[in-house]
Amino acid sequence: MYYFFSKLLAPFLKLTNLFIFLIIVLVILQKFFPKNYIKLIRNLIITLFIIICIFPVGNLGLKYLEKSYIDQQAISNIDNIVVLAGSENVQLTKISSKLSLNDSSERLIASVKLANQYNDSKIYFLGGDGNLIKNSIDETSVAFTFYKDVGFDVNRVYFINNTRNTYENLKEFKQFSKKDERNILITSAFHMKRSILISEKLKMKFIPYAADYRSTNSNSIINYYQSFSITSNLVSFDIFFNEILGILAIKLFY
Image (cartoon, rainbow, N blue to C red; front, side, top):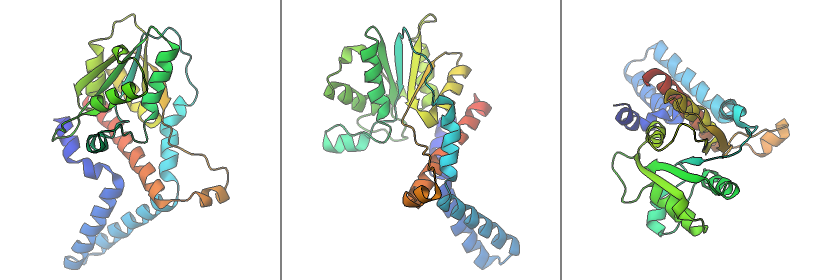
């Protein structure tokens, strides 16, 4: 139920989409019901939207999510390298018949790096297809192409492709993991807090290995001005807001 509910509401789990939708609805309501409180709510939402556009609110949120994973925990004697899907551009890979990755490609790159350092380790790639209408290929198909293209031994990679979200990813991996094994978890830094929370719910232990850091640190107003982008501010805030909702959902429903 949670899975289908989250997918049906997906467009509105991006706060910028929700803001724009609410502004349109409130403008229409204002024409038919010219009440002061409707105008007040509309102006408040517009003000919040402008603040998110102009100021690095989203970047500060990402810093909060990522700060615990800046310093890497010591790694030794790793048995399993667990990689969460999310780096793969399934549609473009299907269209071009060539490997296509997105901004989270560091997840896959990090898995090869660690596997080369720990020659006896295995890679578990956890993915599948989270869409309500399934594609002809999924995230594991793209990941297989990646490992093959970079010349990595695909016999060391175990692909789990029957899961739809992070909770199902880790729950499925639990069936393959032994209690005395040391597991390292690779995912984007902003997504690590939620992933570790899920693993704790499932009574699993991981060494977190964060990749794909998104928060930036402007040392001055001038530097922020030079790199200022409304689009970037909105994207950062959407990522932060989506992660916070995910963390709340895990605490409430699992």
